[in-house]
Image 1 (tube, one colour):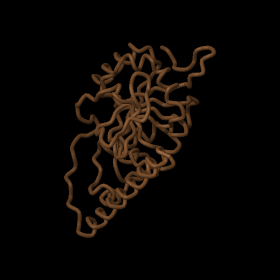
Image 2 (cartoon, one colour):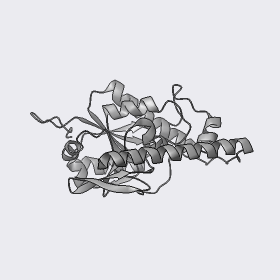
Image 3 (tube, one colour):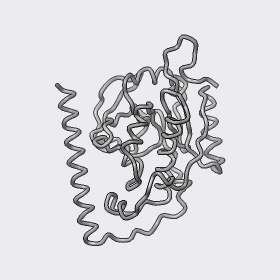
Image 4 (cartoon, one colour):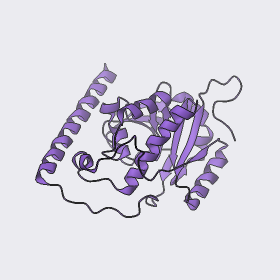
Length: 256
């Protein structure tokens, strides 16, 4: 297998490629393995977590205020898996970048076969999405190989595929210290962690809609009390104000 950035005399950063997947998801794993093996990349599965570790506390009461509801088992497992993988990358490996993939994707084989070029084209970016569930509020920022870099002024949603530098992973870990909203919500809060939301467009991956393998049953949603609803609405308003302010300042700075 080809390890990105390890050729003699090559200045391409080293990329650690991991696919988050439950160990028992044989069909998904087989499909992803066939696609990635065809690219020649060195890669591995990363066994998905089902619950957050002790150092990442989850408080359902805080989630009801931050998100308007408790989180589902699938959301908790997804959160724990990505957060733990960032830590594994930072503390147990020396690679320069991390490519994170989930196991329900169709890959553009040409893009991933040329991952060296994509990594070099990233320049100083610390966080680059390869997919977004809601590509809204975006503008083309720069050419990127035969594609573009699109920048989001709103939320992109989804954690299907992204590239992350060591500095980016450390910023996420510093910014996200507890579970109170889904992990993609946290990753989209650019006003909190300081990394703009950018994506390669057109996307080099597509999601296969199969549902979460961690999600056994969606929890019944207990209605918010009057006090909880008031705090939730206030929080939503503050989050929107922070997002719009950060987006406006960023846009003004880009046009200066």
